[in-house]
Amino acid sequence: MQLSLSSIITSCKHLLLLCSLSALATQANAAVSWETINPNIQFLKQENKLRFYDSNQVLIEGDECALLVDASGNFAAVEQLVNDLKKRLKTPLCYLVATHYHDDHLLGMAVMQHFYPDAKLIVHQQVDKNFSVYQKAFNDQLDSYEKSIELSYQRLANIPKEEQPQWRAKLDLAKKRLFRWQEYQLNTPQITINKSRTLNLGGFEITLEPHKAHTNGDLTISTNNGSILIGGDSVDWLPYPGHGELESWQALLKQYINDDKLTLIIPGHGGTLNKSQLKQPLSFLTAMTEHVKNNKEQTIEQLMLSFPEEVMKPYREESLSAKSSNLFLQSGLARAKSTQ
Image: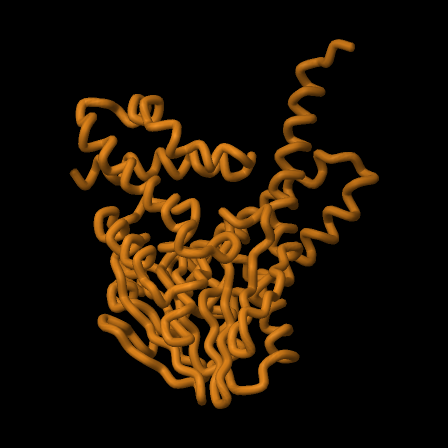
């Protein structure tokens, strides 16, 4: 059957509307799984299909205080986390730790700060210096949601009438959420870290360390006498290098691989790792910097085509990882080239 030009245009408009509505609906549907690491640590693992899009969280609880590491960029999911915490916490939530400044780790802290105003936000000193930038990013994200909702309402008339009520209901819910979120604010940090610092949560100590690796302002947390590391995106199996301090990042991974005490690693994205598994991101980052150094005349496109396939092979074994690894490689080669 041959389609007319007008019917094709109508179908495209319908598809665009469904895509924008689906993006808004994602704010409600995402969920984490709670995994017990030990009596003091809960690992809140992001859904596998969203593992390169949104972050994990970690809840640490001592006898006197609790500490949450990172907050999702999905504000509806953070509100659900608040509801879960109300049922699970046995002690006050004293601290919020953002491992770095990326949206999927920091912006959701505005939701946590609204419900736990006494919890102190902890960031790297470099993140604190630029905090007004991230406060603007939070407001910009809300503005983006508002524009998406307005555009979707406008497009609603372009979809079949029988489908309109369900999508209008979704939009009405999204609008109610937005009104709530517009009352939240990303408040400035109370504690900044520029050197190693230990916190006692009541019979359970954690040590915060500042680094320049995944970004120029990363925090990691070690616990249980150094056997457990909560490393944020600096220890991701597939690392995003677009903002990375690549040489110091490689040195940090080597340090962890050679750490005799370290047995369990909790990354910012994906499941838990052991030291041996860190050899893959180290290989990825090392090959990236060496490839650029040895082929200075090549463009990014040429560098991607000539990049060692043996380094990429482990990432090609699963479709989402394969797709993300191509994007991450491109951003990393650009980063390496800009810092030569």
